[in-house]
Length: 119
Image 1 (tube, rainbow, N blue to C red):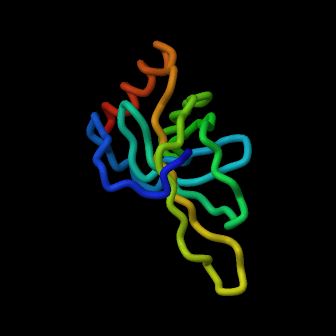
Image 2: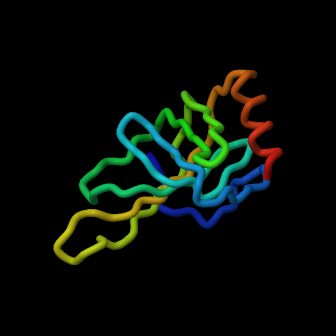
């Protein structure tokens, strides 16, 4: 089960703010990364209040400024928060997910480390 919110600090690595030009995507989601570390990331995206939250998701991210690209990151959703609907008659809202990386390959770890070294 996914926690709706958590007050317990679970982070083991420092998080880095990456700016507005780093985007996250999956097969059905496109959003913005809020922060990232060696062990996970937080991102937000538009969705509907009826959209279920998957426990596991495969994500990719790209830096639109530098062209950096990394995909097929297996992640476990550990936190999810929904905003109020964007309009009273709408079901569209902003969801913020915190995910933990799972089973990254050595190459993915290396590429992620190189990305984080920029910040």
